[in-house]
Length: 326
Figure 1: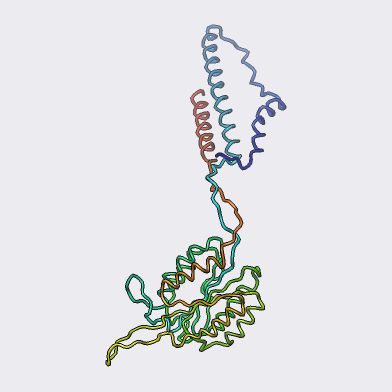
Figure 2 (figure 1 turned 180 degrees about the horizontal axis):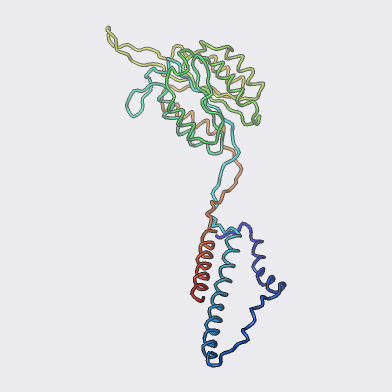
């Protein structure tokens, strides 16, 4: 539909008539005292031509004025309403980049991949589904770093997660520092919407604060933490003495991760393969549903340049018509 942003400007349409009515008419120059009788016929033809020219110029001027007023009202074309999510969770993801994440105990498309690749593969769909949520990204190893502050730009968060690499933040695992950084970045947000999803495959081996102490601080700040333990329970490796079965997740501190989740009102999940990891993300969608007010946005396309262009064309025609009449 067509919408006028400033429709009150239509009240200016009769302005030229008011000016003509309020101001005195312009008096033409007095005719010459000397009259030549035999030129009267030519003068009549000239007067008729000038009157006709003035009539067309008047109509063109009226049309140009109307078009200028219409352009001034700023006409717009409004598209169909588009629903937008603007009020949801403040959700921070903390992803472990320590050296142990390079263990290739996950399978994607029948190929063995490392744990970080599996997280990227599944997390991108999870991030895309969080319409209306503000999402941030923390990467941690020996130190914890804020990679992306809270933002509605889910595509940027996804791209920066895809660009992360094992060992980028150090070889060790500072779980407590990652939680502490999450508390710092979320403490000024609404208390009922603070969520931290922590993904790790090991135990706390670095950092300034212990994971359980960080969990206590998180509980005091009403930050809910969902912890996810990454890694298979068993896998077969080949060696000089043949194939043997090993537990690649022997260093995973499930006890601490469970305690962190329980202290903050969250849940601990175990992801042994990509299917379990995908189910965990879908379960998180159910536990922390996207909450949003139904607000609508209507795309606008400006149309003022159409009547403005026509008004300029008509003004040019009036000018050329006056030149021809001289």
